[in-house]
Length: 259
Image (cartoon, rainbow, N blue to C red; front, side):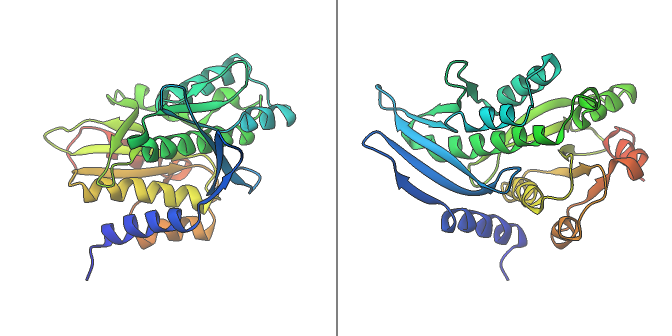
């Protein structure tokens, strides 16, 4: 029987290939219709073009920025900090003039670049769930502060490549100790999007297939849908409710021996 981790990775990559469509726009650019959905359940589109020196530029065409703006979501100071941090963590750039979120890639690395750009766009799409009232209490900063208060040493926003060669970003990493292997954490602010769960599953299992030893955890807030929980149960990755299992999570991430 094929290894479960290989099944997940291979099926995920096949799903992407089977559900990605290409449309030539003109002699210089191509639209890539991805299978990933934005916060309005529309497919995320990527626009590809060649630069003068032969590299490839992948961009969202400025659509996400103007979409946020049309919904009255302005980049206030706090949101701008989060916006910039999100771009930086994925190695993505922002054009102040065209409002494009983009990445420049060598032709032989364009697949990885596209993966990073889509991950980044999905993360920024979560801005639609944030209001000015709760922006100071964003889930990320809540976990960040909790780890600091618990005196747990960690690295935020790290990127690791798996067996597939795709880079995966994790919100927090707690290093290897005598007592515990490295711990990798991803956050899902709203546990109602099965797609985000599947993306997490792919990331964690891609590392397992690369032979990396770690403990993986997904943290969420609110009430999860049945599909969301089932996705993790099927592949034996633990998703923790931050509101209900905070002590358990902090114990897992601490460097005290596991009993």
